[in-house]
Image (cartoon, rainbow, N blue to C red; front, side, top):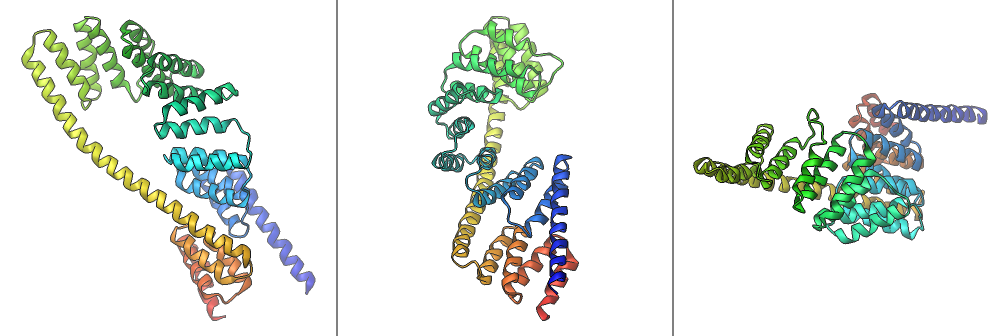
Length: 397
């Protein structure tokens, strides 16, 4: 009998290892959807920080940052001293625009005496989101001083200077960010645009045009209309109305919903004594501003609602799971506690984690009805209908 049990256990361990092998193989092949699936299957049996971490990375590559941060949270709970988990988690929190929570993670990392220089840059990004530009600049400079040099850091440093209206420093660092990319991609074009915009704010219109004219005409970035408008505006300030009007009309043709283009066109037409056309452009600008204000208000309201919802979901998960984790430390053989934790997880659609908790409960008490119920619900939600039915039928066993 003992030999039979050992054989079953060896088969189970071998099966578990196969699941993990498949997960990592799919991850290495960039098949993140299948990788996430197999990582989640592995988590039904093992609450392992590494599996949570790579499942989070899979979600991140699938463009699901909220699910990713949930995985990184669990990984952090399992191994609170792993630096990579903190760096990935903080990056995702910044992507979700949760700077306060990111700063809390950074404080936790400092308390655990984590020494990665990347934390300086991450703190700078969080402070930039909080509009604390001076402190953000200090953090970015500290990161650069410690050898953390990347185009994105120089870009964020330039942005902080720009928002503080220190256009000279902004111009220098936008140029540095561009030089580090060496490519005419969207990021590089954006650095060129803001470098030129900094020159324009300094009243150096020829230098601004010199930068803009280096952008290949064939390349259309996501701010192509803004680039054309800035070119037109610079030519207008240099007294070249015909050239200015050409670029402004091109900008309007590219995106007819940018009100500042019509205002600039109105100023040019007024300068050319075309008063009626100038007035029409001013009215069009006012109309677009009114429409954009309404759209922006609706967008902000929607984004705020979504942000509040995300924050509440994360806070709810953290509070409830932390509560049951503490109780389970004191009572690791309490099946009812595992079942209660599972009830929280299933409401958050954490189905594989629900199954893991239910399995723990059922190992302790095979007749724990709440665990059977929630495990079957989780299995059903995952489309595993035969397993769900088998789980329900086990109530009568």
